[in-house]
Image (tube, rainbow, N blue to C red; front, side, top):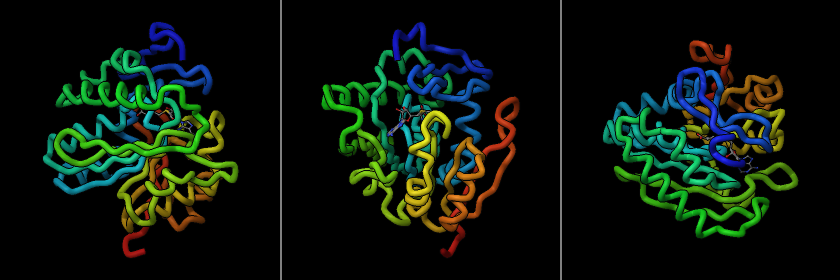
Length: 254
Ligand SMILES: C[S@@+](CC[C@H](N)C(=O)[O-])C[C@H]1O[C@@H](n2cnc3c(N)ncnc32)[C@H](O)[C@@H]1O
């Protein structure tokens, strides 16, 4: 990603995103970065409702990126006094100044959370300076504002066989998360993170009743999640955004 001024885009709901040249697409929906993040991930997965009820919630995110999904989820947790444990994988930290330019604070109840995330990125970038993006991931855990934890595995999520690498596998321990936010660029731009083996590992990490959610409704994604034992459902997308999005739930009691 080059200079912020070149990469910055304004999306359909007025919120901003960044264009990633390598992926050839923006980090968030051009129809509305914040609106779609809320609709697909927080509401689609049921996490918004669980946090509003003050529950302890564990999320695994594929692609921490600019931290939008993290910040929207954390903001709800803090607002409702709920405890959030957020796990994620990321292979390339963004520059904190680029993330600051996105202005996430305007969309949060507690805008001070952005400063916390920028400091986290700053720390992680200094710890991992010079690391190759393809290397074996290493995980760090930090306490989140309001309690709870953030654990991020830094490195390539999958190996040559398309399966989660060590630290990522640990974060995907069977039946250990309430939701998976699958936000890894589109299958066309980033096919490795949409292969059946990785989707199966994500599905296996869900507790009974937990949900995987994303914007891709591709047939091979639906089949892989169905084969992994999830109940797969296409749902309407957000107003003015994608026509359909995908939610796949592990049946309660299984
Ligand atoms: C669409 S962006 C994520 C946006 C983010 N969820 C947010 O809320 O701001 C996709 C992210 O996945 C990361 N990514 C892509 N391929 C990866 C891989 N093989 N391993 C780990 N991270 C990867 C990219 O670096 C990028 O930050």
